[in-house]
Image (cartoon, rainbow, N blue to C red; front, side, top):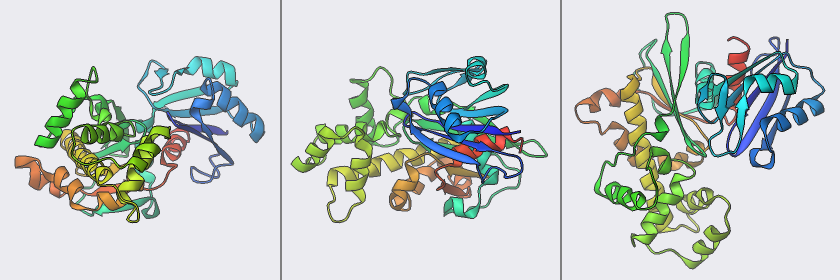
Length: 328
């Protein structure tokens, strides 16, 4: 009984074949594809299975978007996925679509110390709820609750909730974006799309001068976020504008992580996933993140006791689909 697991994102799609004997950490075959280069998931999966030469009996896909009645529209991709259509096209008897953050949440109980960087040890409560927030191409959120025997993951679209500024600079940021976007959600300021929005606000409002060489790099970049991060953290060629943009991003991420922690009372811990946190670890370890995370008024003491971890394993979402599909 072989399982096809998949982590389907707006930027890349990772697929792997697992068996119950080898487990979720030892795939029999594995590959990653640029999502936008393919018209649909079926095309990627068919190519992968053909090259692997393996016949799978079931599939479990974590997808970047809400899953309703076995169907999902991928956020930041023009794909519509349907479990029945995937079954027919791929000739796989059982196909299950999961929200990508639900898939990541499935992996959390199985993460090892090597998969994590702990920002705060905290005081975890056994069986306490767990919060997962993941800024990548978009902003995903999920949580896990203990049912007496095991943790049960639940997805969320909280990343699309209204952005709530916590200081005067962020109030100005909100006003700036309200004049340019129909809706300003946390994803618009706390994701791979959001960081360039913060940068543009700071540049246009004169908080720091944009160097000509940086403007040239950003003008030709397909994805501006890595350029901004690089010149915020690179000591040899650092940009004050990029530093301020990243500091603002980190503060917003800390505040929203704290909001999610309060929303689910995450006494079991908070996990930062997605592609961005591992790349900005030096910034997350400075004061802005935890100060924003803990600034919750009467609940500040409670939030200060929560463990906070960064998920370093880039294949954690794929691990989660394997854990789900293998029934772990």
